[in-house]
Image 1 (cartoon, rainbow, N blue to C red):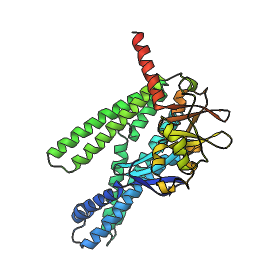
Image 2: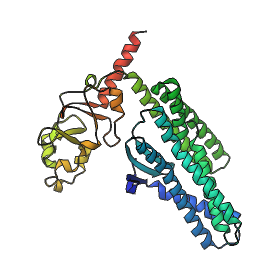
Image 3: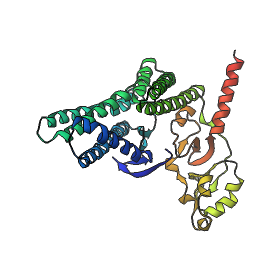
Image 4: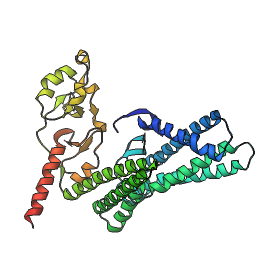
Length: 376
């Protein structure tokens, strides 16, 4: 996600944090310290409220992290590649491959909400128990607040709207019932678009009535609508390309460059002559070693282009989508990584024989549309 930076690892998976997370912590801490705690536990000093609210906000962010970690851990147990976990203002996002069965999709989807509900129940129970002890009113209030927040998070994520976890549950159930993955994807994304619009409408009504929470609902609804629309388009593409093999979609021959060249020499001899925004690389043995993006080369200071080799700034082959000529294109599309965009390297017996880009997919989609019109 743009605007995020890597801050560490969680269970061996890269953890990234968006710039909006500190803002979210401040907002939560302010609401807890200035509104909730003074009402629930009146008579304390500002220092107590400030410290307690900061602890509560950090605990809530930790809960969001555990929610996403549950998705990641379940996915890895089910042999799904997980790229990273990102925390941001609307919660979190785990980038991973596509599940290969409905049962796996269901297990990954429900793991997050179940974790939030379990944390919420535990925190709520602990808060109620602490409230019975003298002198523990403020910590008890923080735990009760944390419990209700997690219960809301778990319940909200179970709304039947992709990309929320509830939408993934609906998609898995329909996939299991119909045996048609793309049909299930389209249905879940449609429900996401409907729920997203409803949330925006409710948010706008709230704003008109002076409710500050309305703006948050508008943003959440907009996010759900946009992502659901993108997922619906992806499902349409998978349906249209069903049965198409990789060798029927790839472009060949491919412009390539040697990965041992300096950045300056690569720019002069390869990049400026290429019509593409990324160039596949070959090693000394003529085997593919990765992809370098032209924009990455452009960001290298001119003074350092003679010192850095292009392989140092390239995306290694292990992080690229790779397919054999005989593979189904729909399965190859599932291997796409956000870091490389819509690019699939076609490799046969260790040698690069072609590449599939967004232009190739667009060409196939136009042909599919024309065939559909011709049959009417």
